[in-house]
Length: 252
Image (cartoon, rainbow, N blue to C red; front, side, top):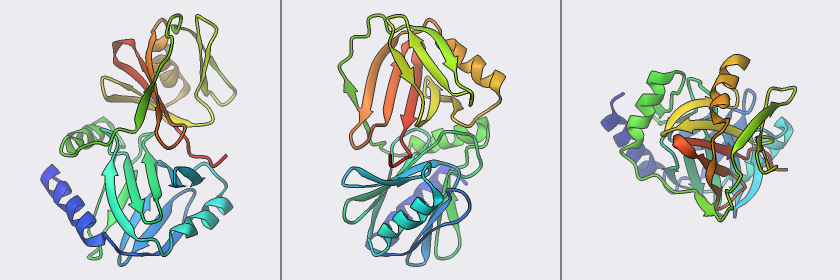
């Protein structure tokens, strides 16, 4: 699908679905969720996600399936308002009435992050299964105004140079800085970028690949840190264009 066609379908979705009530919401396989608005559907599949109300998390993709099945019912009867994007990877933010928001986060290579299914059974979505597909998503993102979700925090970055990386039994990393501070990746999902290009994510690659990417942070200095407006999502910028983004997908 060409970028212009994608943009036209996006505008069609926002125009035609606006004001429709959610008539059904359900959890299928794993953390996949479907939200039906009239005869159209939102399908979030291979992405981390979170549903919040007034900035408070209701449920996320990392929660128990029983909690997911129960809490997504709060969407039923709510009116769809709009879809916006918050990154060059088209992380999606779906807005509903009563200040309910569904937010997605790209944290591993896979075919379908989210999909919009139209009444005529046509669809558009985000495919990020390889570098070529990710580059197509980056190209499409240039046609949209991306919403800023991180507010910079004042930090004293003296000594915030990565000294070593410790891995737990699940191979999840912890950064140890020269000044003794520690940066935990868990319990959030996360991804690593460089110069706005995707390097690796929470569920990507084998052990050797993950370690080879993260080893590039050794000796790098953190130069800024930002926290999202409505959650504890975090963005940390390091020298030489390296960025780590963390995403909360658990109610607790």
